[in-house]
Length: 361
Image (cartoon, rainbow, N blue to C red):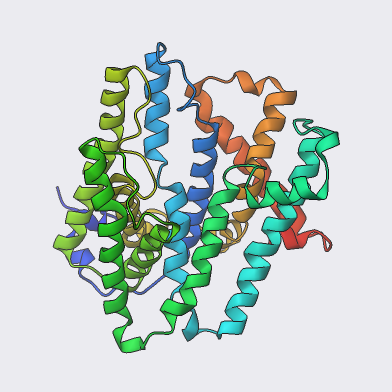
């Protein structure tokens, strides 16, 4: 059967090898599906299902594995857009943008959601409402645990200027070097140790491990890989997904408790799966989603920080005040989509309110 121009790049070497202009719409789209995926992960009851209900848990395991790329996608997007910031603006402007776009919203949302949990959801006692409590909730990410991920990204942002100010002619070599260094010390060695059943703290297991996604995002964005390398990465990504999915299921049913051997954002299956999916989106976005108006994609993509902060509060509100908390795992994707739409709508509203638009810069 003859393939037409809409055939995926992975199946059409001739189309793949043509000159491909760099486009960034796929990054906005990556942020959108990552934002939705984060909601799915937190609505999903993967960690809480009674293992006697095997059918429901297996569906939860599929959702968990399928959307496990979500948090890494944010880090990959950072690497694709920010490691070359020096080509667009200076260090002062870089720090100013990170302060306005990330740090200020983090403080604002922590304070607002703290009040929301005290006076609306009432799961924080009023007698505990004081400055020290708010301080601890912020630095310990006790409002919602996902805020801890954003704090990790903040620390990563601080390291980016040190990497960006290398000589331009050598930077790709440096990025590739750091990628494989972090892949070895943060992922491969700890994964091998865990496979052999040894639970020890590896000396390099620190938060800088997330830099592996920063380097990977930049490498993927800046380079056009050969057809064979691209196919190899896709195959490894599929293989990693299967290991994560089937391996978790097999071990969990064997020991009658959830075994997280193959899980973890800095674990080998997640890194390969996330990077291969990011590469697939970059190479195939214009063929699959090319007809979508990029203005809408970029607009929604610019609002994804709002859902990141709001979705757990919306989830708690729905579960406390409506019947939707009884929705089964089969309808989880629909429930997640409703929460995503609500959070995007609220983000758009806040963006147009002068005194509150700092929450969604």
